[in-house]
Image (cartoon, rainbow, N blue to C red):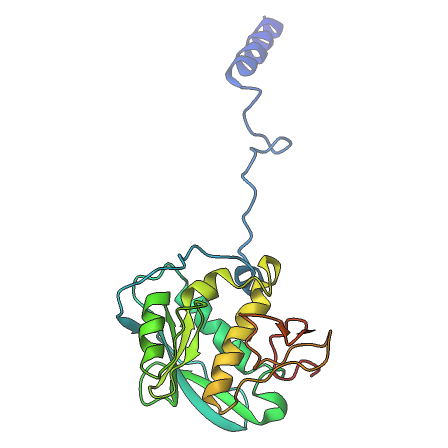
Length: 236
């Protein structure tokens, strides 16, 4: 009788346990964890912005404060992003702060340091805007950015205009695999104008192009072809 009862218990237990039921030896399968993209990975990706986009024309400041990390001449800037752009404003702000304060940028050897503010009086306003709005603000300073769909320092205003199409899609000169470097160049080049630097062309074939060369347009000037370069001091 005891043996029969045991058989019944064994049979009942077996019938109530599915082969697919998780056990310590056979845990339930879990979906693989999705690792968040790093800063560099995010800036290596293209984003969907049309070349002829004209957004709202209204701007919103990126909130918060990113303190100047250095001891050199301090520049305080604000970042405005045009409302309606399908872009990450926080990522753009992080890229600007990191790039400008890199030792290969204008902060080289502690000469300058850059601080992002969202209130108060900035020295200039770095503005991420659609191609249409970029064109309008650049025209205020007599600049036509519509021909090559580029960015500008609108010097008669407080705005350094970054063309959202170029920020999102890059340029043929850098190619799709160098979007991070292109975006760094875009920041350094346009802020370089605000700091008083004019255009410079490469004079040595095969050398790195100066950051103040118009690298969005071409790397080949007067038959001298140079390599793309995002930095003011690339050897640092």
